[in-house]
Length: 622
Image 1 (cartoon, one colour):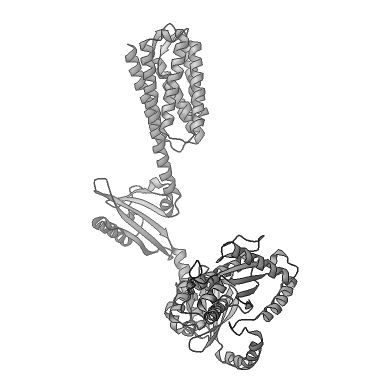
Image 2 (spheres, rainbow, N blue to C red):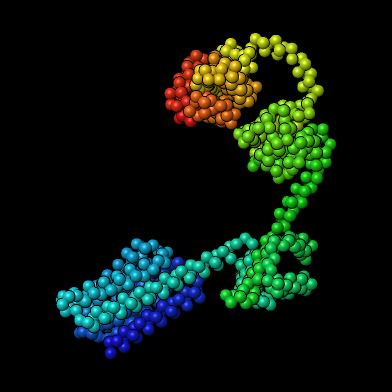
């Protein structure tokens, strides 16, 4: 008899949970509070039903599965749900009477409290299977504890009692697992529904006869319906003129017949008021798990505004192109990412060897690579590597004017200005005649001045010019509160180089280093000078500490690429040590700035040579 009662109780629990799942799915619009109260009410009614089907195993003590429903209500419903369930359960148990009322009420409270603890421990939205197992273990534990208390000790626990506890454990675990699965299923359904309902485009699914099966709310509203359900069963013939609907129908049937998706198909639609709208549509055939065709899914996006903007842009581009055609200068616009947006023919004509690369959509680095490969610019070596390209690409986004010597003797002036959105506007003018006039006027003066200011061996500035320049720049940057950096360079193991290769080769080595210094200090304000013997200096007005360190590393890399053999060096090539100092450290005199760079140079040589070292309180060694 007790086993028949337990089987009936299990069936009652299964029935209650099944009814709740169907009701909850049907009334998914319930608020969170309403859902919790409804869940608690259903579990409470189930507990009452279980107690009505219970069997009296001792005077005033009944065997049922009320604990299972209480635990499920607490763990999966929360405080409101378990409160509702516990109240109904307590009322029913009190009405049944008997000597076991008080222990039964205690058991109800314990299951409710421990169930709530598990609810908050695992999280309100958790669907973890461990939560179900913990729920079942909790019910079994409380039931066992109350049985020991009632029987007066473990020794009085009967096999029937243990079997009943096992049934409660299994029933609770099964119920909790079903609820866990249902919550996961409900979550997936809610996510899918939210995605369909809230998506900004038109989403829909049709059957093989092109009847709507599912749509999102946007589709319904677009056709003057208030709910998605009102679209179910309709076809395009119910929504559009027959000729248009027939075209839609034929296209969809062709997609399903061929099995080939329609992707990003643009189509116009003229409304009754004469307004033209544009839509971008993608449709794919749907197949079930057996591969049978079951329908079609589609996404349609209203691109009317986008088409209007594109047309306006095309119209504006036409006007701009006409204006650019009449200009004598070259004009180009680069977007903030460094890609050429547009340019006129004069811009391409100014750069004949790289004109093929100066096309809309091309990145500035690709254009510069074409310049290097073609030898278009006299001031750019064909051996210029990624360092030059990277540096020159970054200069695109600096407001500046620069003069470019070309392979055919022409000179170009390139003016770069930045727009508010970060784009770069480049204007190129031919200044060849003006440049030749300037060169003729200054050639003689430069020749005379060069004899006094240039180091005879390396062709760069001498020590006297360096001393004058650093004094002038030091005073200027102190007044303007700008930046000034200094690089002191020493050729590593140069005495050993002279002893091994001779002084003539030593002179050639210094000349090559002088050439590299000139390639690094290429701004008009930069000054590369021979400091004395195998020591050199580069003065960098307007350059901060990070910029100076970057140039120093570029110098080392350039010398490494030159790879001048040096058998007496551990690197087997000629290397340099570099000390870097910057005026940001508030040096009082130029001599202090030079001293700081010299100390950094000494540290570089002390730490192994062929390295860059900043003043001790500036940046780390590199």
